[in-house]
Image 1 (tube, chains in turn red, yellow):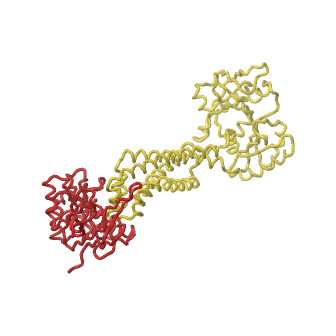
Image 2: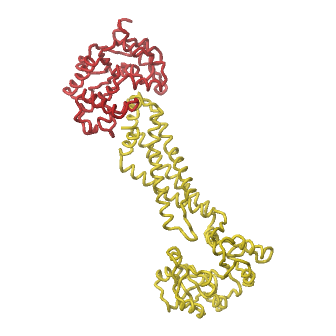
Image 3: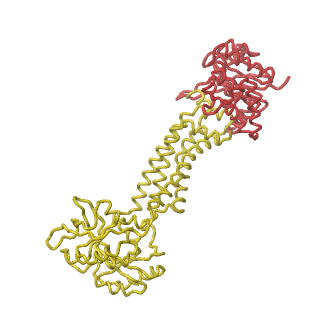
Length: 231
Length: 382
């Protein structure tokens, strides 16, 4: 059996809100194999986004272990995590989160400023990423000149451009109409099947989840399967 | 795109705000450059280099007149080629317009100030007309005075023998400056000392200051020391200095010019600190989600701090250099002569330090805030 891309072991995560400590994840354990496309579903407050943030190295667990690509990311400092994210993870968000002052191609180029690539190499990588998301013809447009679907394609190109093994998608179609959402999900499917990207996606939309190869349900900070087994 | 390109793109996000902020910094540094130059000028010690004239006044204050009996002794000092005496008249035109008028001996004025150019017949008329006066071109043009005019000029210091302060003079000459710089100094009027001395109620035989013309500028310091030593421990101790220092002394009567300038600059920079600091802080507040995305993509806290500091530095460096540049040009245009407002190396050095200090002061707190953005909270809108 191959080493899983993501390995989460007995992870607890608590937040302090005012005087209260809220535990969001309760000893969660999860494996995501390399090349998998997992959809995380569950009601609001179930801990989906928290889990996604932990897997993506945007936040650290209160306790437990998280390995991504064989590396214990829960032990990394914030500086080490930043470098790790730049090399290993691509992020796609519900509201695209592009830089409004930059054109599509410059948005895509942004993560490459952290690499040692030359300007020519960066331009080439950007062109390839935009080609993958079929948006080469809108390279010089700023986000406000693009439709929602096009903006999300730019965000996907930005996530892809440094060729990470793992894509983290938080409600990537939550702000799109059905047709556009299906196009974006189809694109993610292509990235998973043809480019071998491991994808972990949070969604509320059952139709979106159908594009994934596996659907996991979270409830009250635990995977439903785990919760049922514990019961 | 480079990191610099990214910073520039962010700066141009709101062009009007960027331009207005830059303008406020340019204006502040223009003021800084000029005021600092004034400060340097007033703070400078006595400088006799290149002085062709010296002014001897009473040691206590130039408002205390010196007796005319000092004249022969001053004239006899080696290196002195000519001496004139002059008295501040306290001239008032019409209702309450103060004018710069001195009483002087016409022939001596002509000898000591060859930079004042006027036809010989007008100099002669000035010498021969007891109630005569001459004025500079600028003053004549300002009030539309012409040769032959009889002008009522009051004095707010010296009443006449009859108790009246209403004096009357005949305009017998209008002088120009020998060059453009001296032409700027033609806002002064001169009356005949003999008439003033006989007619004023406070007595005669005293003059406010003596102005000495020197044969060799290199001897200026020596001559000044010799004169002051001559009258040391006498009832009329003197202080001899260059024209430039004497004229600056006039303004120093207002108070501690350096302190005034420092307070103005403090007020300017404190306001600037608030304006620019608030602009940068607001710009950071508006971009919290974008900063979180930068960190999500892998930019370190230090990189984000650097981006914001660089934006602050851009404002301060570009605005500061432009302001100092304009101040330098303005200083050249308005300075010169006895008031050389030179935005020189010293002012630039202080200016560059101010730019660096201001960049840090306005940028550091917003930059630290930006670098401490928590990705998860920022993306969740908390």
